[in-house]
View 1 (spheres, rainbow, N blue to C red):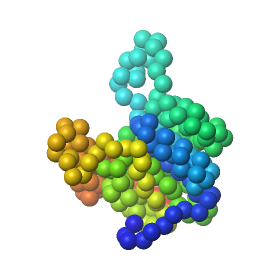
View 2 (cartoon, rainbow, N blue to C red):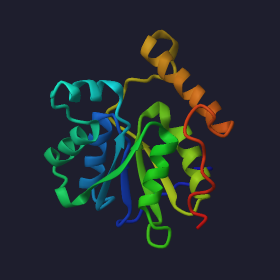
View 3 (tube, one colour):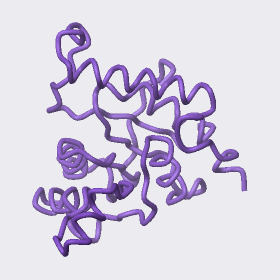
Amino acid sequence: MGGEYYWPNSGEKLLASHNSLLRALEAAKIFKEGWAPKVILNQSLRRANFYAYESLDIEVMEQHEYNREVLLRSGVPDEAITVIKEQTSNTIAELRAALCFLSPSTDTSLIIVTSNYHTCRTAAIWRYLTEAQIKGIVRWTRSDTSFDPVRWWTSRVSIRRLMNEYMGFISYLLGSPLGVAFPLRVLED
């Protein structure tokens, strides 16, 4: 970040952003490489489909439950996995929830696993929320080749992702009027 190269000491924590099998797999790799003894999962906001299935007594697993299973089957022990109870719907809310789980006095960094097209906005939001008190190491999934910055305009999916990122960045720069409003700095207490 800002030209600095930093890799965490062991003892740091690891956040696998929600809604992605690839992010959970990457978090498991990083965990098994010894970079973090704890993996944090967020819960996605439950959408209307969840409640519709629930009203029909159809059991549906939530994304964090799938991610937990991926971590367990990839060799991450149950006691190393923490699920944050707060449901989140966007990057700002997700990072705020993770930050509330951390302690600025003992946690010096957080490895944040996200998609390759999402790293810049994630890093900017993390720096804003923490005022650099807890270093954020934003890491994209090594196996995610779904976004090619050279040819983004040739794929409808890539165009949608990029436009979503631009809109998210504009929302972030405007103080997040399109999503969860920024709190006063999370670490101010």
